[in-house]
Image (cartoon, rainbow, N blue to C red; front, side):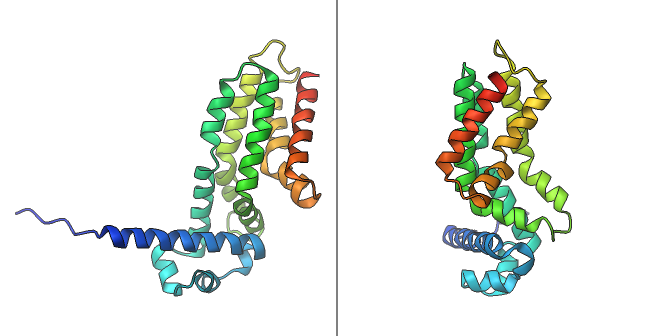
Length: 204
């Protein structure tokens, strides 16, 4: 005897998805503004206009919410397509310029997500794992770009591993944060200087 599949209402599914997005959006803003340790599920529920039990039912605990924010931030950063485009470029100048432009766009659009993660690190139960999870794909993309830069003739004078580290130093989230958030640079100015610094350092 075959069992019937439970009916799933498309309208209810869309409503649930909107609720999840609302909760995650409000949680991201609160974590970025106050810090993860100073935000309770009740605060997120109040900001989203739902009951705390709705938060737990929709997205889980505060730790689950932060994990979802990290995963969504990685997925929405556009790193995969940007990396593929950069790996198809045929001059160092084009690669570095695209890298500066692309990482600027990703860090600017994902600023609240990055702030939420950064402020969570000191109080998170496993901050090192959280940081690795949030940045692993980013670092892998920069390693791939470093390898591509070393395919040119002439190539950077330092080993490819050092090139990858330098790209992370310049174009990783902490580099952008230092210049724009801590030092008050505009995103345009930071992009211009990082582009020039990387080009001069790696290719003279």
